Amino acid sequence: MSNVFDTLKERGFIAQTTHEDEIRELLENESVNVFDTLKERGFIAQTTHEDEIRELLENESVTFYTGFDPTADSLHVGHFVQVMAMSHLQKAGHRPIVLVGGGTGMIGDPSGRTDMRKMMNREMVDHNVQAFKKQLSKFLDFSDDKAIIVDNADWLLNLNYIEFLREIGVHFSVNRMLTAECFKSRLERGLSFLEFNYMLMQSYDFLELYRRYGCRLELGGDDQWSNIISGADLVRRVEGASAYGMTFALLTTSEGKKMGKTMAGAVWLDPEKTSPYDFYQYWRNVDDADVEKCLALLTFLPMDKVKRLGNLPGEKKNEAKRILAFEVTKMVHGEEEAQKAQDAADALFSGGGDASAIPSTEVTIEAFKDNANILDLLILAGLISSKGEGRRLVNQGGIYLNNERVQDIGYIATENDVEDGAILLRKGKKTYHKIIIK
Image 1 (cartoon, rainbow, N blue to C red):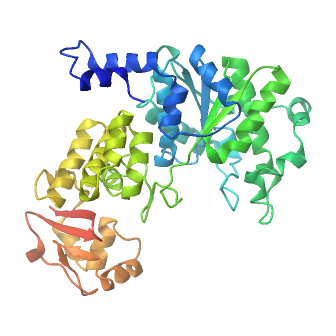
Image 2 (image 1 turned 180 degrees about the horizontal axis):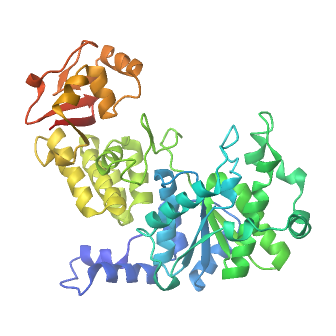
Image 3 (image 1 turned 180 degrees about the vertical axis):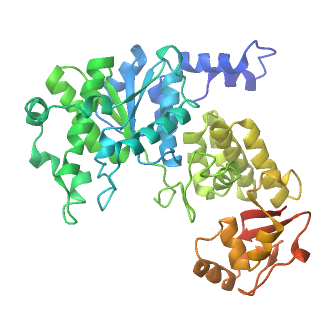
């Protein structure tokens, strides 16, 4: 499904435009139902009422919401599919509500977990909520209430327990709740009553958002399906109103494993947690089989281009990965940081470009001498979490200093190893770090 603007441009009709990106976006919004766009790009996993949702998005400006659990002070790439879906919907004229779980975050969502979440206090939750607000402002337009951010702590923390049970609890069947996947997987390991309340809390969120803002559609990852259908059902039961739910495919590899995890942990959107260079490199190194899906879900490139790049053969697929990495990094960190990351990667792997964006650590000459053992240098660079890991990597031939393999775990770096004021460390084939000596 191609935007008519792209078709006209490809066929040579267009000579000049006043605002090319805006015209293209306008034509896209006017010509294609956003539901079809989401479906074509591979977002949609399940819906409560597909035909009704499609018609609703076609004929009305819909207020919808997605919830984010503030258990960390940054979003990660696992959240990014939902953020992109929200952006598509907003561009088509619908209004997003970003619901941060300041209240539910103090309980914890049992979905996809085998143990109970660490309890968070109010100060931790508030700090994380503020960090989310700042990050999401990069992707959604919050001006003039085109999108809003709300915190469910506003209504959950002051609930009257007896009133809540009488108004909300009466609509939930314990037998039905126990068939939900998020609870079934926990029954043998143990499920606290605290966590058992989570479905009621999330369902009540939908009811409150309907009452306050006319919200009629909840979106979320596919692991939230049980909670989402319970919320839509609660709105229908209590208010007699039409409410809907839609889930998105989780970001997984072609082998079914969750994406966004590295040996160092999650791939964060916060540049202090995952540098723009490391972020770029993550997408540059995805498997060939995952390139087309990532281009469709995580960029706004037209689908005809996505399919063409996804079908490039052999070594040519590297160009598709390069485009993927640049586009996603540009959205998250800005075009300047994306270009720096690309230049640094080109400098390392193609012999050209600017290597200044390679992750680095500055140390004094004294600190360098105190940490001259290769294992200490690797820890200093953050390339390993322990000396045991470092010994294993050296013995397996996976550690390089200035592109020379280190074969001795007792190797001591000297000033003779310093080139242009730095030492270049490498773990495996593609993880680089500079130690800059001042």
